[in-house]
Image (cartoon, rainbow, N blue to C red; front, side):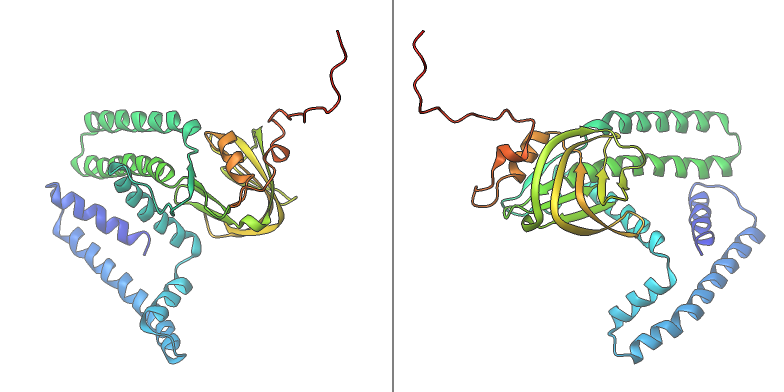
Length: 292
């Protein structure tokens, strides 16, 4: 199904673009699509019927069937693309995604903005060059659709990161996000300390160490470390679950993020003790200074 349906979309694009396709090819493609859809119905209908007999409603039975048939990684990637495209619309309207009243947003896109715009520029140049070099109309149309969609997805990825910032909510809880790919919530009750700490972890943007440390890096760097009193659970971009007791993430203004995290809703949490890079203020001495 994942091979036939994209091929059907590419075929439709070629027809709209005016590419002449032999009738036998069109007939064979449509027969293949019908066969794939019939196979999917044969696989999914018994699962749906079983859930209905178990007492689930129509919506719950349909969702359970989709979860059983479609791998979790594929579902999450599809959902991510829809959310990223939605974020592109929010970005165009200069809006952000679901920021509760009283929450403080903290952006994290500064290290990757230049890289993203470089990717966009290179993709545009590639699209123009291929349009001038490739002489075959069918190949030209397919590559044009792929290249334009790739440019849109790069912009959507950046838009998702801009419109979905980290949040320190009014009750002191922390919400870490990376675009539409990652979302973690840490209640205020489990946040023990926070400090400014610049690190350069290896690996991908989401990395979990054996010691329960989560690195949510942007541009291969993190700037804030948060210690928790107990582990919090999260879902990784492709669906695997994990637990972390130490959170390291990037914020464009790490000192402001630490200041928001190290005071609770009542303003009683000691801010200086949690941020080792803040100079410690000494209490005034009750003993008078000796005479010169």
